[in-house]
Every structure is written in C-alpha cells, then in structure tokens.
Image (cartoon, rainbow, N blue to C red; front, top):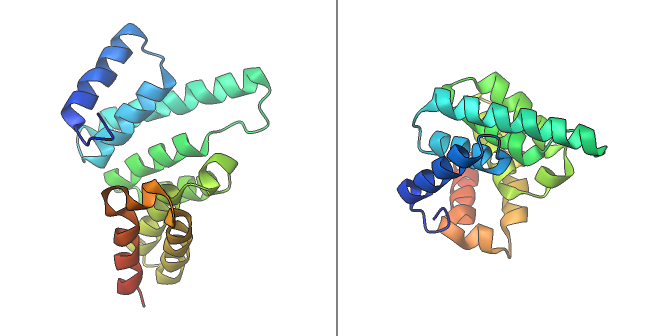
Length: 160
C-alpha cells in the first residue's frame, strides 16, 4: 500500500499488525514515519518511532551486532522531530544516521539531512547533503519513484 501511496490502507494494515504484535519494530517505524510524513498525529508518530528505535537497539545489542543502531530508524525519528519543529534534534539524528552503513547509502536520508540544514540556514551543508542524495538516487528506481531525484535537483537549483 505504501508503494501505491495508499496511506489510508497502509495505516489500517500497520495498525492491525500492531494490534497483533505491539512490538513489531518495522510496523512501529513505518507507521510513525508515514504519520509524520503526512504531518499527522506527530506525538503518536514520535512515540511509535522511539519505541521502534528502543526495541531495535535492544535486539541488536542482544545479538552482538557491531552497529547498535539502525540508521534507517534514526532517520525516521529525525523526520518526526523535523516535522515537529525540533530542527536541532533532527539534525543531530540525521547526522548520526548517515554515519551508519545502512543509511549512508540511502538517498532519502541525505535528502532529509539537506532539508534540515537548509531550514537551519546552512546552505552549503544543504547543498552537500542534496548532492549526496542526488548521486545515490541516480540510476535507481527510488530516484525515479515519485520524482524524488527531480525534487532533489529542484532543491539544488534553489541553493546558491
């Protein structure tokens, strides 16, 4: 449903998953991220994603994973904070996220980092992050999907 951009159906399914298993990390993260992406229920979105980060971290530590955090989940939490107006908190989390292997290659995380840097008045930092996103979007379905690469390129043209 998310790929089809049917957010209402996606939300229903994710909430049903969480009714069955309130600790489903992926469902917690995805529901929280998409609520934030739509600018809805931001307090709930933050609670959901923080729970996903907490459960994922505990699981990684128990498994002895060399990375105690998921950059993808940190990106989701940072996106919620960004949407809630906590730009400094979001920036710190986005920067932690891009330092982790799973998020370093993810163009969306770099795009988000560019957005928060831009909003904080750091044009050079925004440009660098958006360039990193543009490079990672090149020759991928993610870049073509929903015009994401074109959007990043529009942002780059607006920044001196």
